[in-house]
Image 1 (cartoon, helix red, strand yellow):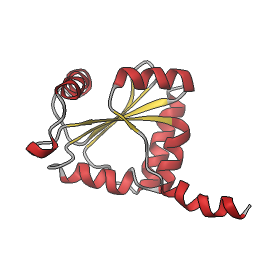
Image 2 (cartoon, rainbow, N blue to C red):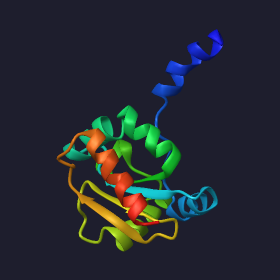
Image 3 (cartoon, rainbow, N blue to C red):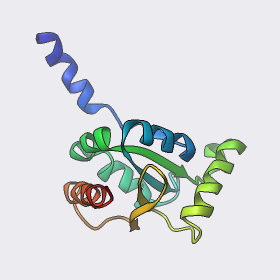
Length: 145
């Protein structure tokens, strides 16, 4: 039992598993009966995107819900040369943007069902606490079932 106490804090600090291929995420979501949260970000230039990852997605309440309810997908569009994506990843991100973010909004977050149908959309940084955002996502999940 003491061993579990030592590992519990490490588990709670573990980050979200981010996927970068929507087709693979849809397969996982279908197999695990989960929804998909697709986030478009500019990790090295978009202040609200960085804040969303550091505040909302890093929140313990959100992480716990995401672990059981969501497959997380990040379509990142960095600008700095040192952070450039591989051509294959850039093509995947461009395809996601063509379908779900043709206007190029950042951050843009979408709740999708396992088949890729949009259930809910958040444009920009959500002006709510991480806990309220988590509830908002859950409400979208349950209304989309």
